[in-house]
Length: 405
Image 1 (cartoon, helix red, strand yellow):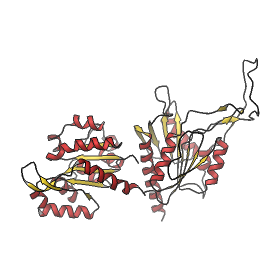
Image 2 (image 1 turned 180 degrees about the horizontal axis):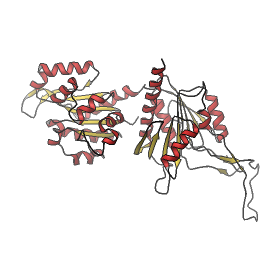
Image 3 (image 1 turned 60 degrees about the vertical axis):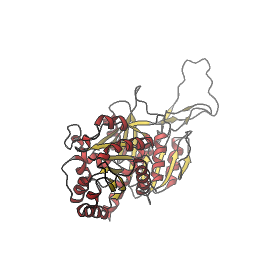
Image 4 (image 1 turned 180 degrees about the vertical axis):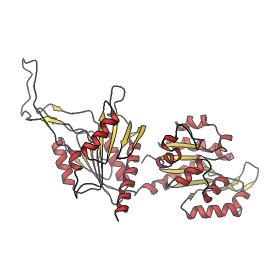
């Protein structure tokens, strides 16, 4: 699963290795947000970080552009894992004692995500009882330590305290990080609908839409990778079935509704499919000939509203129902109205126009609307949108379950 990694670079001579770490993580396909401490700015520049990460690094605790969404909380919440590289004696002391006097230490205090630190300092600093007590206390809290290694240091001395090399660090954090998030959805049953529906006009022609199914398939795959039992009800697409996902092929909206009902009780339902709103009242058993008429009139009737039916109150309603809305105008307003009308918990909205047509593309910009908040995820790969949606959904369902006990 594509990961969102928050990298905190602190003020040690090994800070320059953080640039190599960014490059390696990006090469593996991961999104990297970077925080530079005041000390780190003495060794690396924001411009070099931005060139490698593709995003502007964060340096200030109080930023006018970030505080509208409480920057340190948002950075902590958005990350899958947090990596501190290099980790100086100073940042370890702050972490141990709960200091929050800059952006980095505040994030580390506010997060509930896995934290990996790679210490780097003079061997006497590393071996000092104060540092060792800090390390012991942090390890007991679940902080993962990688290194330090023994070797030559910038000061000309030799001993333990050398930062682990970026290549080794990438291998360790990605292997361990995968295990950390692999089973977050274990024990949950999930229904995902994806793709278009085709409504027959005659044996040759049909009413359809431009949905490719990519976003729905990515969400089904992300849930499966997180340990959930996933059923994917898919309209016509050319996409292969995601690994460990039970796929049911359908063509029409009525077939999709029937398949969803056959799945039975689930914990989470994600209705991504672009279901045709209309179908022919009576489709022709034979090809309709063009003839001499200048016009062809088709009588249409409404298709079943699958999202609204799944969202109906009752003992079989999923704990969390997520709908999708493709809108051309007043995107957030129309999507919010749809959420209320359909009685679903969340709506994931995206805009569709001549300049932004996400159908068939690998990237998308979406806005998540729930009962109390609106959050936009701009310009992300659909796989990353899926991964973030899974984490948010699982956390919500687990929270509701724990509160009901």
